[in-house]
Image (tube, rainbow, N blue to C red; front, top):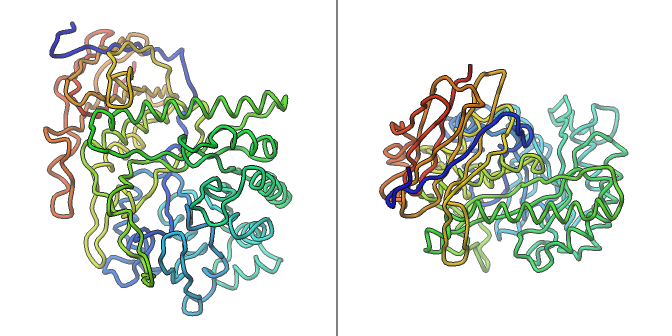
Length: 507
């Protein structure tokens, strides 16, 4: 029953109403040559826990625990000035280069072969981006030949001579990065990029028609060209690409309730992007369906000092950059963003949390020292571990909230995954209210749920609590004792600013 203290949100769950499959590629991440993501992040040869290839085994284990499926590489802004040839061959002979994107120096000790080896050890699928900023079609063909051809050609034999006998067999390729952005090296007009992307895609498909290719969409929904960029790019490339990228970051500017509306704002962006894609499909009278690769998303407090790159004559190797320290509230937002991506699984076919280590990341490391989990690690890891089968379309009745800039958004954000084979359904729920607890009342009779396997909530009295290397465990997802299953009804108390997971066993 609804009370002034505890408003009630109602959902109805029925396995007959499916959105689409749970896609493992929803749980991707991102490794860019930026700050300490690569050097002293995944790669630190002198670290006591590094293996024979220089990879930190503690980071590898945390990557596996996080449940990452794909990893996008090597950028990001970095890729638009990257010469992939600099990162292959004997490490001692590789040239150091200026990284104009982040005003740093890259020693090129990690390149495509090292990333391929790391991906195999981490158990992830590599997702490679090609440089369409300062380079073009031929260079994209060259790296494709180097990575994927078994042998008998100049570049495939070069790879073998460099010590990687078997091809990397990379299936997912990004056709550049954020080419609509004026900050991007080689920034292009929509018509310029559209032509280059289409030409590159056609040429890459002549090597392997089965590749999964991602065209650059707008860098953010606030870009003045959003919509028109998509129309121009897809009109030129629709038949030769599979996905178009979406990028969106969220920042807490001091209005906690506005910050907690992030999932609502992401949902609006996805719906807008779907409309732009389908407009082109209709105009072209195409039978093909292009979908979305949401290959950069996260909380990023980009206006803070942590995101300011070096300037002047200082071009350091692996500077401390974008090392946001996340709060419990940030973790609740990340959990909500994952719920939103799952809820749109019919059109979002791939996603990448940006990034994996140190740089706006769930995993942090000390050079030569410890590694630890940020708050955002937990909702991602638990969702990746337990979401399986089919995403269900829920009927939702929720109170609404207003914030400084966003009005009329639901207090409850929820999704349910249903796995008939495993006889399990999982409810993921976020209470977006900054101040009020919420009672969840779920009609689950159609599921045939017999008992609650597990019920955990991530919250804290202080939503601004942050994990550190010295204390990363005093606030963890903990048992939600308010969860009750009685016949066909599931009830749960959802504290303000909280993320909850309830696993149900099915008959």
